[in-house]
Amino acid sequence: MNNPLELPILNPHAAGIDVGSEKFFVSVGGNQPKVFLTVTEQIKALCEYLKAECVRTVAMEATGVYWINLYGALEEAGMRVVVVNGGHCKNFPGRKTDMKDCQWVAVLHAHGLLSSGFVPPENIRCLRDYVRLRGDLVSMAAQHVQHMQKALDRLNVKIHVVISDITGVSGMKIIEAILAGEREPQKLVKLCDPQILKTKKASMVEALKGIWRQEHLFALRLALESYKTYQRQMAQCDEQIAQVLKGMCAGKPTPELGKPKELRHNTLVIDGLHQQMAQIFGKDLTKLPCVNESTATVLLAEIGQDMSRWKDWRHFGSWLALAPCSAQSGNRRRREKRRLTRAGHILCRAVQCMALGKHSWLASFYRRIRAKRGAKVAIKATAYKLAKLIYLVLTKGWDYVEEGIAKYEERVRAIQLRALQNLAKSFDYILVPKALANAK
Image 1 (tube, helix red, strand yellow):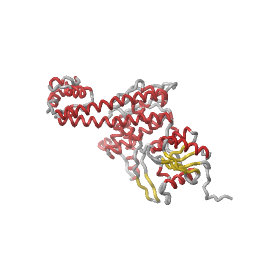
Image 2: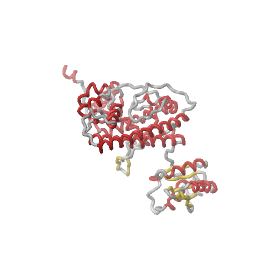
Image 3: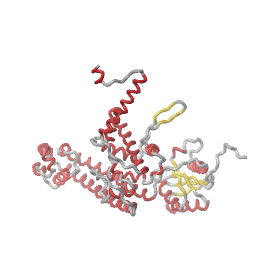
């Protein structure tokens, strides 16, 4: 009779791989490991070795970017690959080397004790690479905007004090005219938008009186050229993203579309993006507050279109690291801080753009939480609400309808009144409106 305390082996043909930048350490069923290099030919040899050992499933830790090429090769070889969070199989004594680590991963996987992290399908991974590259280009372009502002400060041209964005139409025209040799403030100010001239013409004329030193003009020219270079590269990324999206939405019906939203700086510039996002998701996410088609595209690259990976909206919010997290040991319970995932960051940025809105109930929720707990907590709590809406729209087929701030605040007042009535009842008091109390 088998010992009931012994763990059953669920995957007899399981392997574990310790992934490094130079070598892969492979163990089948916890046996003596075999070492392969990370070059392409050795990756192919590793796959052939696992096939010869009749391995059907492989577990490995997600180490930097080194696991990605191996994952693709194993996936093409027809094996089930489990990408494990390293924190789930560490902190065990006596397993401090790569050799022993891969054996331990193989043993845990054979007993079915490892669960896979979220790895999207190949087309989503391709889209993710383009989107993340574009995000890096946006960050690098922003650095050169700061370089332009510094050069303008050294020239004592204070246009970035008068207008909010020097990369707008007016700001770019003025900078290009300055680099072309124009120095007269009255001529430069005519390049501004009529709306600026209507309210800020005098301030702009004073801001354009600079101290024209050659070294700072040279710095401004280099910063502008670098900024334009990154803008061209971002446009090239948009073209590649458009090709991937075109293949993903081919043959899919178009659901009912909401009203197009205003797109701001650094958003994706793709024709028909609104319709493509609705086709891919099966629902128009832009009907939700603070989500436009560009945000939906970036979110698609992080979470994919299949929401069955998460069992409910709470699980989804927890995966995004937006849900409150706590750890319990005995009778002690404490809050734990978790780093937001990339998708969580996307929703938080969307909430920050919506924070000053005057028409959405979600903006009212944000301001109410901010007044009590501060902006940082309010952003995360509102993003958690938004994640819930996204999950329910994509899984339950909900059609979101904006109720407005007035109805939301009325519901909040009703909840607060009910809480006051319950509190008064607990102290054996009666809650009386102020008007009735004064009448008596």
